[in-house]
Length: 454
Image (cartoon, rainbow, N blue to C red):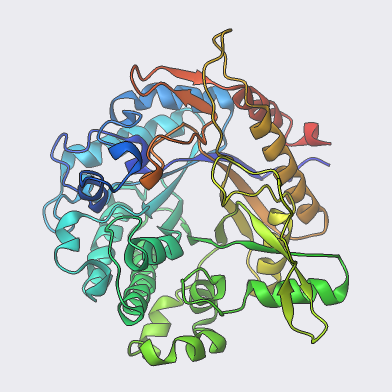
């Protein structure tokens, strides 16, 4: 089957990972600029001061997107490029950069999908407490209002935050991402609550300031639960576990998604976190649950679960087994059924259409002797995951789009340049772009609206 006519075929990037020009033209420092300049924080001490130099090479990159045939391009704004101190004075050169990029995308027939926050908080705001300071709700609202006022005449698709579990869990609990903190559970829960409040304020600001109809969401992530067998008991066990709140590491999807859609934290999570919860008011929940238009979701992997003899969900012993296919990091086990179950479980629970705002494969890609980049594993991976989305669509689950992560090889946070996700190879010494085999393959899929997948 082909995909729906209106299905969005896209690719995604994030500002800090590709833009470079970290202190150019009035840009302020972000927490990632500070974090990567600290010894021992990243792979081989690498940073994204230059990265893919997209700030200067965006025209070339838009031309690649047009050649690829993208219908949508998801990218993030650098908050500190637009507001160097996080609030107050606007950096007009930063605004001009995004103005030009958005205009070029539209001229190329590509719809911009803008993420306001992809992990790069202005350093000036972190020094005021960052997510632990409730003022971040209004700081983010000011920023969202500015973005809507400057770009909302041309941008109709927005996401407030990317992957809250990573922002809080990796950045504030485990210290492996910027700002590199190791906070108490109570402090992390406070930061998480403020993040969701900021999301709500951001939704309000976007709706008030955009000059065209706006479709707004937040990009969640988790790890899918795959039923060991497709029987009612195992499916229900997987569903129950997918939306459970049993961990104190902030990776439970329901902890983030239920407040946004339902206006309340899940009961199981409130019981789990009870000793450390911040004050939560009805007014807070009303702000957090501002209506969104779709479910944004970053889907990569998962693990098998089953219904145990006692009726409780249990992990399948040994998971996928030794030697299972995976990317260059252990966390990315290849689980082709993940998009199907993500779409099925989430749209059934939340009654909203879903967009896969990220999905991709990390590999050790390099220029071969024939001066090409051959990445058959990535082609196979994407093909399997897209077939899973096909299945979801065929069964009536409303999936509206797919954004491949990533358009370009880029700076992968604390992993530096050690892994590559892109459809386009980037030589970080020369900035030469080389489309990989997967680039041509994905272009053919887009041209046929998925028909070639079978």
